[in-house]
Length: 118
Image 1 (cartoon, rainbow, N blue to C red):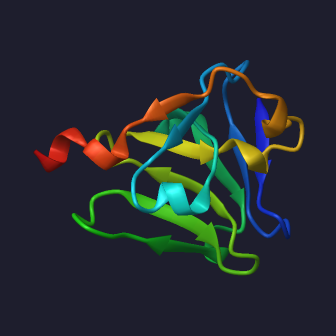
Image 2 (cartoon, rainbow, N blue to C red; image 1 turned 90 degrees about the vertical axis):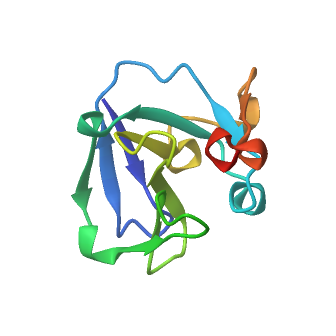
């Protein structure tokens, strides 16, 4: 189990997987601006345990994906991607035990050429 928290600690989540092994960056218009490294799990493996009332939702373009951030500190915590809303992508930088500057083999999620845009 991994614990995710925003910068100010108002929002916390539990990620119910043994080890995070896949890391991604996305090049869509939003993700390239936030620069987060993400991983992804099934929705039932991600649970907000604190601060659900502090989360704000941002949607754009097709309004299918749901991007969440802390309304206090502004940090992006997670989102449900439009390619599969049954999954939760989360900001690996919000997990204290992971140093995102030491990660290798970060994959690309090509949001700039999203298959649902064709």
